[in-house]
Length: 487
Image 1 (cartoon, rainbow, N blue to C red):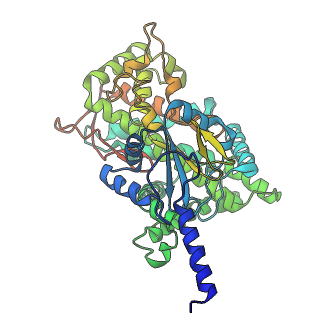
Image 2: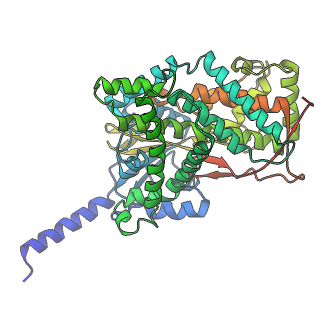
Image 3: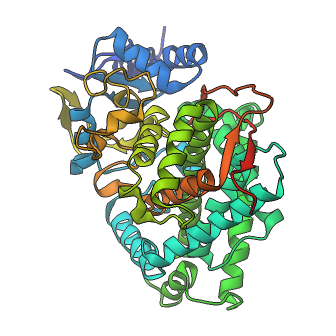
């Protein structure tokens, strides 16, 4: 005779399995769920087929004819929203202000839910306010920042001039300069060149590792104990430890007062010494990582796409140069020149649209039960925003698959339609470094085209197709930078 306890256990298992595949009432349409894995198998298969999770989810949303796609990834309910009305709702409504709390997020934050990017609640509000205030007091967003960007631009121009027409991949020097600007605000000094190259390599490897391993580790985190190498866990841990060591080295220098000035690290360490609640070395380390990740690869990738585009299109490159030459001549570009260089400005806006650097923004976590486009979204649901789809929405953009800077210029010769672009997000979680990123992209791009022609190697054009992981990046390419005048 079967013991009663076994029968009860069997009933509990059956009920648990049934509940795991049962969707909440009025939940957004999407694939059916299987026990424990949800619809991960469907998403993973489509991701392999189309080369990125963003494209896979877009295909799924179209197959269900929905602007709100309902999923379950492992045990986590996930919703992907499409369309400007829905995306703006997620950006701006307070019930979507949270961040998920799962293994993947903690792994990204060096093991704990700290920092600014993936924290929420009172701690996030306090820490973000402190970081923004201290960075601004150090010159962030002011004329001092512009001067530092111009100095980095001159470093890039000298580097390109030394090449004497020898081909190079511009991504390295661009990423180096962005990182040095960011690190100057964080730690008050540039990073030694070999150390900087190592840090950039680590951040690049980390991004690729998370793109590959994130889904598996997030859905079945216990797999790290069974196959740590194959799951990517060992690689990510090793990279995290090396990045931590670099940041910790600079924190120690500040504790010993070996760096001149009064940068962000000094301000934060002062709060630690005053025993202010929430201010710890672990928190400082994670904020530093947040700033480096948020700014380094994204900003340099935008510039990489911009240079790739003018390399592939001589007419656009000449038009941009003619505008720069006519309006600026040899004057050093400034942020205020953006309003004068109309076509150049429109070109950069089109880069933001055409090559959306973060096509799936988020993730957000719902803080309460809520609704999107009439669909019920339970509390604790993870929400993603398909900004990449919005930037090619034919209801907003005419011929969205074509690269046309002119779409941002109205008949009166002023900029238009930029309110439909979301390269830095919107609302309270908008990227706090957007001012630096936009200034750096504009000044450096104008500075390069002012002094150099950008040509392909032996007339062979590199591919314009991006690599799309957690962020979009140009495929590695090289170009020839030829000085426009003998200087």
